[in-house]
Image (cartoon, rainbow, N blue to C red):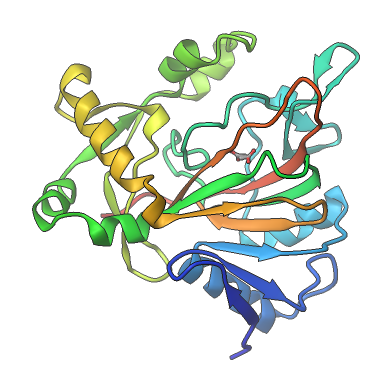
Amino acid sequence: MTDLNLTELTPFIGAEVHDVNLGAPMSDETFTAVKRAVAERSVLLFRDQDLTPQSHIDFSSRFGALEKHVLQDFCLDGHPEIFVVSNIMENGKHIGAFGGSKEYHSDLAYISEPSKGSVFRCLECPDGEGETEFVSLFAAHDALPAEKRAWLAEQSAVYDYVWDYSRRQTQRPPLSDEQIHNTPPVTHPCVRSHPETGRKTLFLSPIWIRNFEGMSEEDSAPILKELTDFATGPDFSYRHSWRAGDVLIWDNRSTLHKACPFDEENSRRLMHRTTITGEQTVR
Ligand code: SIN
């Protein structure tokens, strides 16, 4: 089995991988080791990567098919697998998703088979701002009081993208009828087994959760807030400061992430994300 040259970023989440060029041909053994490290460490950092949109797609595709995001206007021209996250405007138009990812979430948790993971590439980021913060849902799960953990193991949450979009994305154009049709509410267990390691993890992506199954929105809201506050506290987190050329792979099944604020009026931040299709959520 190939061993990667890794440095852990915190005791429970994240590792930097050295001596791997994601843009060059990679052996199956090395790729298997990368995949295993993502499943175990949840976030992997590769510095100084010189990728093109196509080599970004080619590497990401080794994990599985790639999603084409529901917001196709924010995907890269000619490369619909690349979702652009940016505040930059060209010809009076935003070139990417802006202002929407500053609350904790797991990418595409609102679809029936939520994404396995994302490969995020930094092209431009202002110094000392615009970091991405992650939390380990493995660590949060393990630290829950036993009674709450047992209760959550039996619960499911209802995710409703259209409901959330209409309350939060007031600066973006409204969803089309087709986008609404393509994103109906879905239900996922609040604790799931990681498909590759079997380890139990909390699975809660708070912004899209409308209610716990069988419970009203009003009754669900304070429970969701308490759980979110617990899981996203500093104890389980890693904050990544970006340099151009950084690539992060994160596991959407065992983490939440959010973008940290930056001066959107005067600075430029440009990131490319590929999002790997997932599987059904299993308790
Ligand atoms: C994302 O939510 O996928 C992007 C996070 C970021 O912009 O840092």
